Length: 477
Length: 112
Image (cartoon, helix red, strand yellow):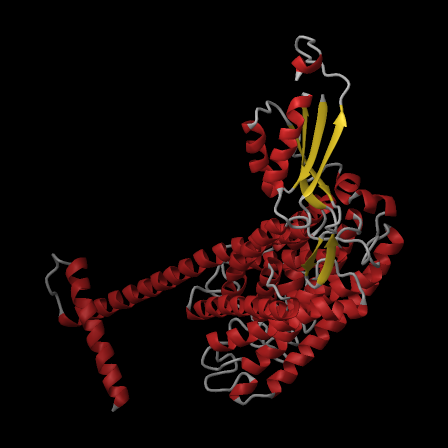
C-alpha cells in the first residue's frame, strides 16, 4: 500500500510538472494524437528532471567549493602569519626573523614538493601505508571531483586544501629547534620529514585503503577528523626528538630567555584560533551540518582549554597570564582537532578543559623534570595535546553527530563502543613510532651532511644577523 | 654651575618635569635607562619558568643649573619624585666647570 501511494504521488508530481512544461514548449501545437503527445511529454519530463538534478548538484558543489576554498585560505593563514607570529613573539629579539622565515620557507618548499609528488604520495592509490605516483605532477587533478574524496569538490580544491595541512605540520616542529638550528639543515630536514613521516601518516589515516582509515577500508578504523595524529602527534613527537638530539640552547636554563614580544604571540594565537575553523570545520569537506558541528566543537574546545590553563596557573602562581591563556587555547584547539567532527558541544568543552590542564602540566612540570629544551613547547602543546585529544576522541565520539560506521552503530566509548579507544591507541602508537624512528634517522642524515646546529658564536649573536643578514627591528633607522 | 642627575621612577617623570618647569628650569635632558639599587628587581613567569628581572626601567634626568637654583631644584625633585617605596631612585650633584652654547659660543651661566 505504501509503495502504491509513493508511485501515485510520483506520477501526480510528474504530471503536475508536465503541464507547465507542455504549455511552455508547445503552446501552438494542437493535440495530433493522444499517445504521441503523452510519450513526448514523459520524455520532456525526464529531460527536465535530469536538468534539475544537474543544477541541484552544481548548486551543492559550488556551495561546498566556496566554503572549502575559504577554508584552504584560513589554514594557510594559520602558518603565515598565525604560527609565524605566535612563535616569532616567543623567541628572543635576535631570532625573530629566523623563526618567521622558517614558517614562510615551508609555505614555499612544501607547496613545490606537493605539486611534484606530495599529493600523489598522500592520496594516490589504495595501499595500506603510502600512496603512489599516479597523480605525480598533479596529473588528472583539475575541476572534476575525485570519487574517493570529497565527491562534490573539484579535485583542485581538495588538493590545495590538503596542501595547507602539509605546510603547517612541519612548521610546528620549528618551535622545538628554534634559536639554534641552521636554516639549510631546517630545509633538508623538513623535505625528508615530509616524505618519511607526513606522507605515510596522512595516507594511513586519510588515504583510501590506509590501515587507519575509518571510512575507506582501514584495518584499524581510527577517528581523526582533522589531523590529531597526522598533524599534531607526528609534529609534536618529532619536536621532542629534535629538542633532545639538538641539545639545549647556549645558556639554557641558567640564562633568562623570556619571549621578546608577547604582543606578537597574542596576535598569532588569535589568528590560529580563527584559522582553525578552516582546519577543523573545513575537514567536513563540505558546507554542511557536520561542518557547523565541527566549527562549534572547535570553538568550545579552545575556550574551555584557555580557562583550564589559566585556572591551573592562577592556583599555582597566584596570577593568570596572557601567555597562559593563549597557550591554553592553542592546546585546546590541538586536542579538539581529531574530535571536532565526532563530538557535540559538551564533550568539546570537556576535551578542551582536560587538554588545558594536561598541557599546562606538560609544559611547566614535565619539561623541567626531564630538562630538555623544547624552546617553544612544540611537544608540550602539540605532542601532548594531540595524543590526549586522539584518545579522548575514542571516548567521546557520538553517533548522532557523525554515524561514520553506519546508521545506529556506536562510534565512541561512551556510546558503548569501547574498542574504538583501542583503535585510537593503535593510531597514536603508530604515529609516535613513525615520528620517533623517522626523525632520528633524518636528523642523523642531516647531521652528517650539512650539520644541524649553528656555531656557538652565531647562536649568541642571533640567527637573524648571522643566517639572514638582517634584523627584525630597526626602530632607530 | 651644578649638574643634577636624578634617576627616578618612570611613573613620576611627568610630575618631576612640571615641578622643575615651575621653579624656572628651562632645559633638561632625559634618558630611559635600566638599573637597580636596593630594589633588586621582580620575578616574571613564562610557562612556568621564573625569571628574575633585576634591571628595572628608570628615567634619568639631567639638568645643569646656576648655583642659586640648585637647592630649590633638588627640593622640587624630592617632593615630586617621592612615593616612599623602595625604588624611588637617587639624585647626584656634581660641579660643572664650563658650559658652551654651540650656536653662538656663549660661555658660562649665560649659556645654560
